[in-house]
Image (cartoon, rainbow, N blue to C red; front, top):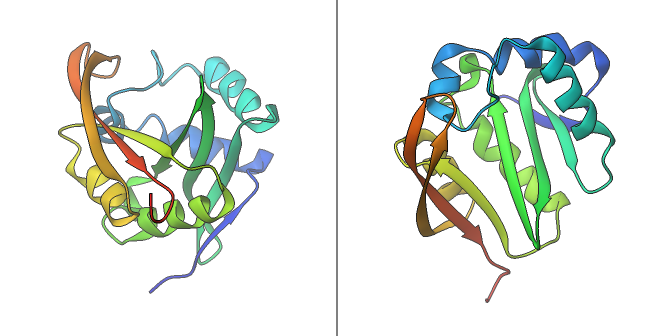
Length: 161
């Protein structure tokens, strides 16, 4: 099994992350994405905010030292949510599950929520393996698909809760 690690996102990571976050298949699967994934200025502004806001935790995911994607947590109102994005070459290898588990060890807040397009079986499997359970669904506009779709809402409670 490859060695998965988390570290701070570096300036030299930005080109790779940008390319990963505009991969057409990944964008379609994620569904809830930037309005224009090819807008580099908007990407740079977004990543600057993610890297500098004190209530956002963003980490680079590495595999054997190579940048594989990102994982993070952020506040939405009173809730804390997690998110992750891996380059397609890393899909289906258990790397996302390991990265999510590693991030969860860094974020003591519980409950913590996650969301995924309801037809994104891979993401739902990752979150389930990390201990999240489905608490509901919502219908929302998915920019990447240009229409409303169902989104699954999941939660990880504190142990014993």
